[in-house]
Length: 96
Image (cartoon, rainbow, N blue to C red; front, side, top):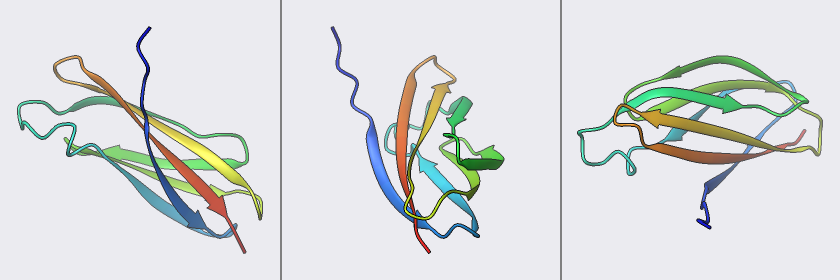
């Protein structure tokens, strides 16, 4: 059984802010021969997902909402042009 290790980053926002968050896959795609072909960002209930975009190495997701004191896990999954897959996780703390 393979164990999947997901790199996690922690960020903070206020309940009334709409902010963009970058999921950076540059190190994973460092050979330059591969790039992001598709991406999915899973946003938990309580947060609202806005515009999502990506370059060949970075996925950007706008997020709003959240409850003061809430802790949310946002998961970004990519598939590369050569068929590899990778996930990054954002732990988002909402504070006022």
